[in-house]
Amino acid sequence: MANDALPPIIAQDAAAGATMSLFEYVKAGGPLGYLLIGLSVIVVALVVRNLLALRRSLLAPAEIAATLSQRLRAGQVQAAAKACQEDEGHSFLAAVMASAIRRCTSSPMGALEARAAVEEAGQVEASKLHRMNNGLGVLAAVGPMLGLLGTVIGMIGAFNAIGSLQGAARSTELARFMSLALVNTAQGLVVAVPATVAFALFRQRIDRVVTDIATDVLEPLADDLSAGLAAAQRAAGAQRAAAAPQQPAPAAGTRGA
Image (cartoon, rainbow, N blue to C red; front, side, top):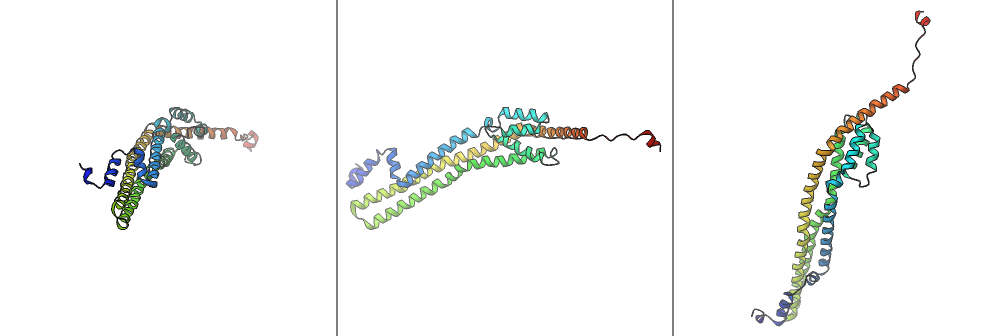
């Protein structure tokens, strides 16, 4: 009964709209609709990438931590640095310790500033993890803007149809442009809402994982690094003393004279 009160062309559009498929809704969004669908695919890809990459087992592998602790306790600082460079996964832990070892070995106060070097290197690497998550934040901001752009384009087309067309043609064009506006708005929100939620959750995940690694792994390794540097300095001092030429003792006659 409701469709009987509408003009035939609008009744046909209402009947067709009730059975529109997902592809038809995407198509109704025009070129911006396809762009927004592409952005939604990128959002999904970034979420999967972050889920796989932001794991403690990858950021701080247990075998790397054990190797570094063993070599640093033995005073093998350069061997520990080599282990960091040879880490195939380029983990967060290896990057932090490699930077800290470089700083400490090039400083005359290396053993005393080991903890500060590890903390500063950890902050730098944590900021890199946050930059890896920034793509979701950008898409969360861009999605609504593109949806708004599609809405404005649809409204402009609708007002042009009202001003330039008459009768059934005006109704058809008005419905088409209004559909374009609303579909683009919905698609922009479909991109923005999950991206915003994922960005916030991954930001919290990065902070939590980095804090756990710093407490459980980096602090003990900082102590090991300080002890290893001190042991290496003592060993180097002993080698220099052993290599230094011995001064001959003065003769007895000379001493009496």
